[in-house]
Image 1 (cartoon, rainbow, N blue to C red):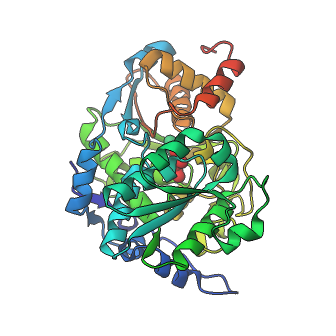
Image 2 (cartoon, rainbow, N blue to C red):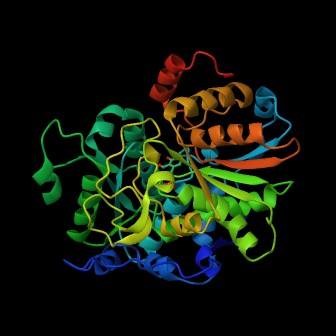
Length: 417
Ligand SMILES: Cc1ncc(COP(=O)(O)O)c(C=O)c1O
């Protein structure tokens, strides 16, 4: 069981561009310090390479199933007809079914340390909302989740499970905040931007509340490095390629940064390539611009330097809702810019085809987000010489993504092509 998180800022060639305020309006950085647990502000800016994991957080990590397993996907290798060795780290064994719990637990703990009694956040499809709901319950905190109204109406399972964990869930736009009331119409589908604004306003207008973000911030990537640190200890052979999907970047950073850091320090992984896989619906790393932009649609959070499609970009709806994000975390964006990380984008049809092949050959039903990594691993396996090694992160299971699989079965006639 790892006892510290890894901070890539310590090893990056060059300084990580810090968050900054826009020229006009109130200070967003000051706002952050009022809504986030204070330890997270320190972690956002720290240059320390290793950050100790508090014993209380490690205790929860243990109880929810960490370390998670690393498997060799021999059935998938056979199905692909490849001599390449494919391994995957499996975060779907966590009780909420995805990696999101790793940072939710840490953030809820730091909120508790600050004396908070309640945490609030936004969620789209519900992966992050579920993780926060469980983490809050484990630390005796109340959780309030603003869920985009279209998901609230269609993703009833995750809504029920958030409530099962004890959370209060509002469809957003809601009638609970001024922001929600301003946007409210019974048929408004909601957006993550509005839901974030609602959660932030809710935190600012109450006592002893903290806001917990699900990705993009550097401290979120830091907490997720528990995945990669475990994987480094579990892998029987050093990979030629490490692969993970990208929403805001915490899954990719969490999995690969311990390896990238070792490579930058010349302590291993010299030959390893790092491939970030995004959805063609939100192709920021392959088609975005590298510049300062807001991480949220309404511009209430500080500007960060990243690959972005523009904060007002609305990705078309795809089953991999967790990848529908316009930007990528500053450290990941810098690594891509420096050529240390490669990026590739796939459409959901080709991704779900790979997911079906994986399901039939390994048994695990990948989350549509994670299926992007499955597809990239399959493509790489076709190109690499026999004996090469690929490792990817299976960030979650797809057992609640029934609609995605129903559609996939309609799209995909022959899974072998
Ligand atoms: C299963 C799963 N994998 C990957 C992601 C993308 O995560 P990140 O924002 O950490 O890149 C998400 C986001 O919700 C997810 O639910």
